[in-house]
Length: 552
Image (cartoon, rainbow, N blue to C red; front, top):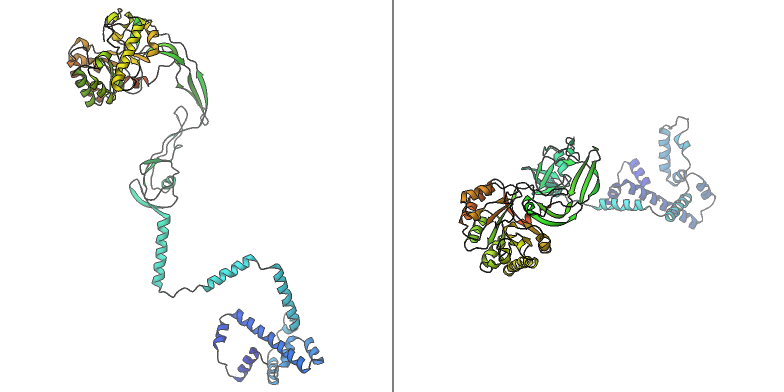
């Protein structure tokens, strides 16, 4: 039997060409598969020839000799004589190729193995492969290559592929590019971009803040925040990532204070030396008893500058009776009115306050509240503070002006009945702030009433409107006020039309000067003076100090 190679050789010698079959064309598509198919046919042909000789009994010396000879010699002898003669003539015409060592290529080529030897070697390799097992990486690679080879892209026009590519690019830009607005300018950035990156890219040119020492001096210019920024109106840090469609405003960076080591020190409270005598009342508009409170001092040392500063963060409060006028940093004052509520006048004053957005504190006469409950409710609803000015202005033994003339129990009753009248109308517990009639709060009454009173309020500016000096004089006194001071006026006890007219003129001017009008409780919230204060407030009233005060 002849192999395919023999047939092709015979065709070349005969000048003929075998027709190409479909199967031959598929073999030529892959050179590796064609070679493997040829080897398998040759091995199969050899096995069949060996089997035929065994059946015919021709195996013998000749077979053994044939097996001892090289494989190429055996195949040559098995071919037809005409083929062997043609090969002989060809070999005579071909020059012998020799290497540099003088041996021909045929002489250096080792003898080919016999069929049995080759089969034995193949079985050995297969056994080794089965024992070792296939490599996981090689299996994955084979599957990937097979999957890729199995893909058959449809034959589409180039424009279609171009459109697909364009859609992919647009999707990429949509998911990974963000449209934003920086200081009014629209732009696009990659997802994950921070405010700092926007500055680095030059989309904004802010000036960085400075690095400050603990005392406020500049350590390093430009050592602070690189910028200040807001996203959609909300303040953010420079390392914040920008979201899609963000409206970003980038401005100059803020100053940053250096890191510091801190230590705390207790400030021991002292004892107040404020006098309880009559004259001491006028040294401040706020009077109270204090149990005393230690303060706290914070010391900071800059880690970079080495500068040390100390700051009182909680002032110590002296124990004992304290008289002072508040010293707020803000331009705030207290408008106070005594002897109400009063028909018509209280309502007119509330109208003026409401027109100017002002609050006030009303020191009411408890016995009069039941006759004008609506005025008290209106004042309370406007945010004003309702306090007591005693039950009946110290009538009876107090001679209508001085609680100190009354017994201790009468003093307590005046205050408690005044609280009860306010609570009856408002339905809430009133603040325990008192203004004693005539400002007569000195001596033993301080200790008698202190369990029932949080603070007693005097005044810094007395308009003397109870004298009815004319609206211009009242306006002049009102406009002389300073921040933290308390102004004394009246809404009851007589004709207070001059007071109403003065308020209409003075309050707009005070507002224009930047003043705000707060309640007494709000003024008390500014805190007590620091330990060591002698309690003397600025701008204390020059009211009479001859013994008994008949004002209010």
